[in-house]
Image (cartoon, rainbow, N blue to C red):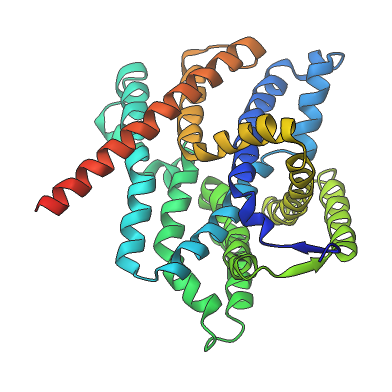
Length: 350
């Protein structure tokens, strides 16, 4: 077994991978701010060159990792308890409670207080209507997760029920083709929501991989090295070429799988050293544990900073925002637990 890569390592390091993904997303947003502000003026800056290369070769790959791991995690959850009502209730509380707390607060501050756009704009933004109509993407990931949660029981049935042969291939093909069809039919709508729909295929792959991970399937390390190296080369080469947006996103999905395998190998090495295991893996696990809350607090604070004209491109200002986002994510997590526990207590007493 020493020459075999156990896919169950994805489950073992799930929290660490979520943590790395959210940290990568936070840093990606800083790079985008930094490069957008300095442009050609920062060409001689070490920081600018680093952030520019990060945008080109890493980009928003953390989102692909997030979505893939979500697919794997949902498979685990549903395979243990396939009660659809219980699944929707549990997942609904997990995502809707923090979203409503942050969403109502954020859109109240932005739409009603700062921009004074009125209640209609507030409702459009909170309900994600503006995501379709105007391409307002601030909290788009939550909308994608809500849709995928609602569709998941059907996706699980199609992929993993033995009666439906080729279900995975059919679903994957449909989700790969759909963005191209939508772009031809309604290019404006495609542009508004492409950031979400082009991530669905990697979720389908995650759901399919869930069974392989849970059943501890293995891959020969030599084959894995060849596969990962090939995906890295394709991913890096593709990022140097201007491709159609959805094609680029699909390549990112493959690229993210190579990165996940690479990160797991690194984490396995780190895990064998006590000091690194305690601090490095501990940091990633911490970030992974609060990744949803940190995503919500981070993207909304970043957006508000841009709305009021704060210099998000400055390292010190951005780091201060991240610290505030971390603190708020911890408070948000506790508040959500209190609210959900209160609902549970009322249901039991009723």
